[in-house]
Length: 238
Image (cartoon, rainbow, N blue to C red; front, top):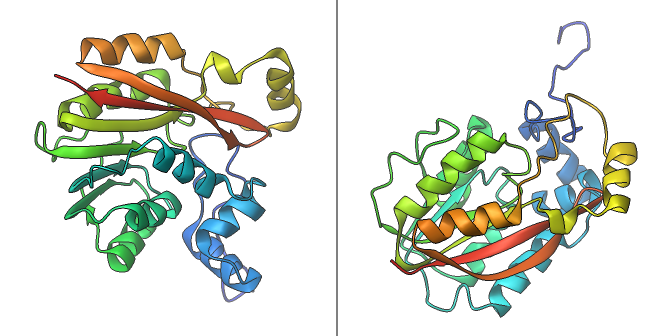
């Protein structure tokens, strides 16, 4: 195909569902041509939500999530690393583990930021020991997974977090799904097999984590696509 002048890449339309990933080569090339960092290119051009990553990090900073200086951080699905890079500027962990299914992005993050890439199954954090992580993160991940896939990750996140540690993730709760927003997603949110965006009841999250010794400390909305997603911050108390 290359000899005939064609280049095969993944689609840059990331709203079709979980089978669509942000393509590594095409995104890196486009960001360079646009004169933007990879993170800014994804926020501004691909997602149409300029400043979304920074605004989320700023909210977490204001909530004191980084104040304790977490020494061990784990991020699920960091992808391009746009949240990872800004997190590293807020704290200086001795170890930063990632679980990323897209090999090119995982390799890029290891080479660029010196993080540790763990073997990834898409639902388990098995290589990480119990109670070994100070801060667990997942940004713009669970809006693309099935209900059971997300639920399995919830159990794992609580397992690996040490007492006193925090768990931060966003989900599309009922807070994000008023009638106008549902209309916007249905008419403007793209097509595909409709697995994105995936909703998750807020009360389900709060009640489950309560049984796992985790207390909800805060929640706030963050931009996503044509609407928003809710970021939840839990503290593990037991």
